[in-house]
Image (spheres, helix red, strand yellow):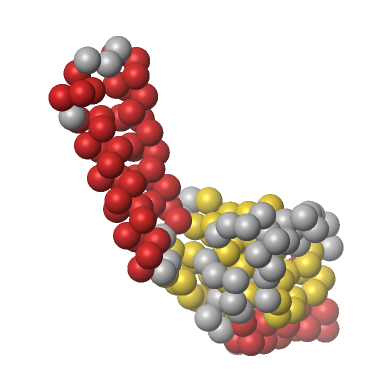
Amino acid sequence: MTTPGELLYGEDYEAHPVFHIFFAAVIALVTYLSLSPFNARLPRNVQALLILVDLLIIFLYFSLRTLRIRVTESQLRVGFGVLGTSIPLSEVLLVEPEKPSFWRYGGGLGIMWGWDGGVGYLMTYGEAVRVIRRRGRAIVFSTHNPNAVIEVIQNKIEAGETA
């Protein structure tokens, strides 16, 4: 017997090293541009804009570098930092493995809106899980262990139906 709020499954899916290298280069470039002597000749509002862009890129880096998947007794939470979604397990209609398509999810990684109306939380186009809800959008998320995630959610759905 599990207690309410107990973590049944947890995974932190770290970004590929190329992601870190890309963001480090972009942050270094924008920081250089915002602090360089060239910047002193720009109008104040442009200087402030460069600093804000630099801070936004740093925020995006720290938010998007780890996909967190948590399944508790009552809900599934998937997200990048503060950007994510929670789904009550009572609302889950179907959970299945999926291999997301590059074209279906707009050709990118991160939080992507699919042509099928679903929302993808994608780190790769490899193994993923698709959760179809009774109401609302379906979500697809990357995971290293799709079978384990599916098994935990299926067990909770079946336990809820028999109760």
